[in-house]
Image (cartoon, rainbow, N blue to C red; front, side, top):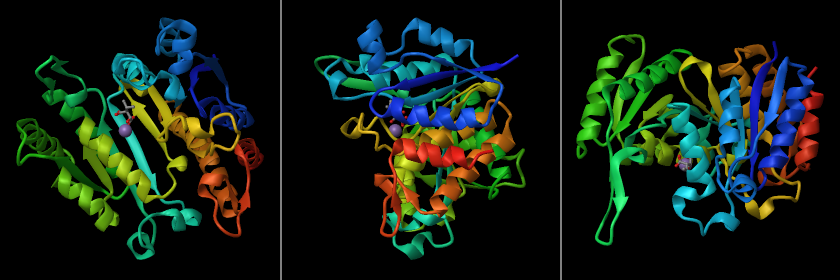
Length: 351
Ligand code: IPM
Ligand code: MN
């Protein structure tokens, strides 16, 4: 029976880049049924909330979620918890227990000059993976609130929560450079002393992996000083949020980076790292590659289709090698293409 994938295109450039990802997936002629559902601002306009029940149901009956982007100026005046980002993304992560957020930051060789770092700092390629805990920590800890007098959030980690994300990091490192840097602030926060101890404990089962610990402030600095020292970076929810933005910018092409948020049993949500880019929405000029690469991650992690995932990734690399660029990654001597043209070029390379 065909597997189902829930397609949540969302707002801004979401629908444009999603159309290209589906175009590429269609070209692979997979036995997959795509079920579209509303999310984010589009869902607020149509159903009164960012994550309607029908959308949750569509996700629940699917093997994975392909997510576009949400948010835009139209919904910025709503209370924060009702806005597209917080109202849709955070509950989706929580409902489906998508605790493992994988954010690769990789320089595509033909785009190396787009990095903000000096060429010698990234020479030989930059390829790191941030493994961010996504369903606990200060984002979700109780109590949290605002009164006239104060605002407060609680940073809390349970043992099993740290253990399971540490395992994901060590397993990922095993398939890569065999190095994990665990990020904390153990010099100040009790939660982070606990984090460090627990990660160290889990590491005992992974003697083939090199583990080091780094304070988050130092890590922020090391990422721009010498990013190639990292292989897998393991971090809690908030530190991982911050460091993954920093890491993505090192590659110079945030429009290129996919991400995966995975739970137990292979279910996952796959989305570009970039946002809904309302300023260029509707113009047909967005870069669809992060969305296309997110669909490759979906095939790999949720549908066990490694060779199909690779086909997509190689197709993207070939198109870049041939010099085709959307506006955001344009450089001299390259051929500028729009969103749909980029989608066409990638799908032509497949099959
Ligand atoms: C991200 C985003 C979200 C987060 C926001 C939009 C809730 O920044 O996915 O990194 O902080 O997790
Ligand atoms: Mn973020």
